[in-house]
Length: 220
Image (cartoon, rainbow, N blue to C red; front, side, top):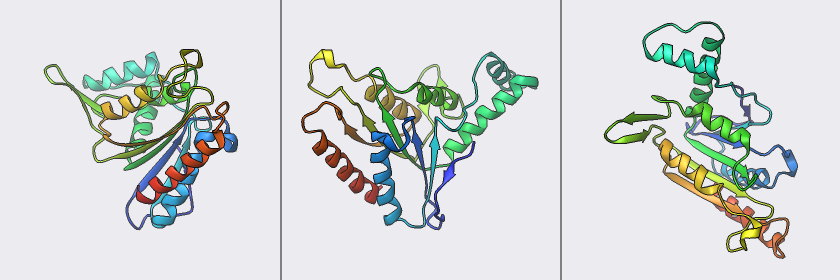
């Protein structure tokens, strides 16, 4: 998987990956807020590496029956081959690329009160046993993404906290924050830009979100 690398070095050893889940490019509210954060981050740490993974531009591997069978063969000490071996190799490579960073920025628009399907696809690809998590029959799951930090930019065009049920509900934040914590990422900051298409104070909400992004980026 190829990330788009911004012009920066890596003198301070920090590696940040921005995972963009909106297909809207420059018109994306979530991506615009994330870019404000990244600008502040680069200004504060000019030697840090910052890359972007656009989930709509970078093809993710399919994790279907062939990949599952290859995974099982490898786990049992066997040898995977054919289509499954290729697919499973791509799954492992996707996780290794993700795991090579110590800081994450996720720009996540609300789709149907949840997350975009491309982000769910990414989650299902990288959430592999002995890579992202381990499991014990007595103690349950243990997330393996230790020492990582994340900022998540959540946006929604209509939904907002405290609004009547007819304006939707938030299945986005609990699901994605919950996945990060399950994976072992406990240092999580969030920026929320809600109801940005219908709120009377939408402009103020945008300004506040960008101001928060600047502050977080400088300290991240």
